[in-house]
Image (cartoon, rainbow, N blue to C red; front, top):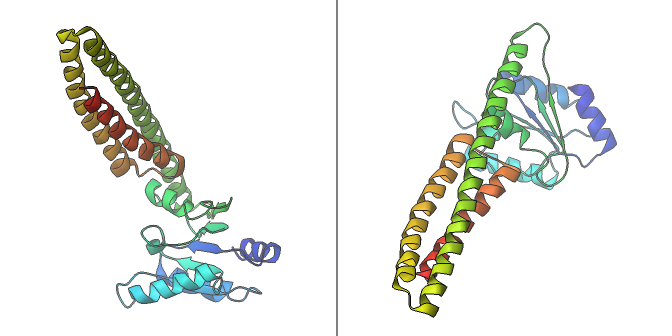
Length: 239
């Protein structure tokens, strides 16, 4: 870890680095060691319990990290989510964690603005290897499930678009020809679009809550939520 950090700071003095560790004692050790590196300005980010950092202290520390007053942030799990941390150039896992969610959250601390790097340190012939394998397997299953759910969402969106087209067509035909059956069909499609909107929205919420998507996947779901509202309004106008 000393080599990774020193090389990054030497190559780019403006780099911002996050180091994740499981335990506070490990964080203390890492702060002491990393502070000996030239041009390293190291801070420790820990939770509020058991004499930890108060929320105000956490905010001040994160401000120093964003401003560059601190360029290395050693953090426990408190830095994985929920706090406003600017994008970093380098993320280092001092040890792997057997959770796919936490692994993704830690990895997500880099590359949101510019390309970054992630390193996971694994001690040979220790539980680290099992933890790394567990996280990889869980993440692969999660990715497969996420892809399946996104595909199902896309199918529903295409079907909803077809229903919008049919509703508009029925409304136009009913208006031009005075065909009451076509007009009634437009009303039927409007109610079906309402139901389809609720179905797709439920699927999107399930994706957000169970899969915790990030980056591209999150943007796709956000767009889908906007699309279904627009298409539902098209159905309302057709009716």
